[in-house]
Length: 209
Image (cartoon, rainbow, N blue to C red):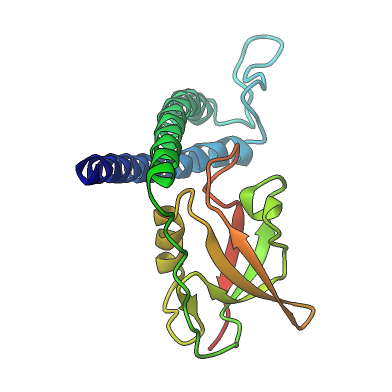
């Protein structure tokens, strides 16, 4: 029984590591998509804008060569992104199933409690995407964070470590304490896949210490 449980935990860990690897790869694709979409924007065109005039000549105000290359790249990258997202979704489903079986055969692990040493906000939410996990879990634009999982004002160093923690917490609830209208509010934010970019769908900025 113990061996079965240990094997399931190893499988769950393996699926989680593979999903994080794929999410890193998808982040790279998102960055490449943004670069190519910027080419279209700079030329005031989209994926369907005609690049030639009525006589069949390239429009002078458009860098036709660059736009065509960008469009081709966007199509390829979107297809790659879709394929990777489907793989991530299968892995997340696998993690769900293995966690459900583990919960049925043993006690669920408690979310570790972190005793912060300060109530000074160290992050501010600058935007929240509609229907994102952050939106659905109660995070609002302008919220100031005084605790995010293990992080608080006295141990926070840089945004990159928060981003890594979010990615490592796929499908795991994160305890968040925010300051809203000068009053503390506690929420649980669960990073998860959704139709948009990232796992939570909100953006932070670091506050001066």
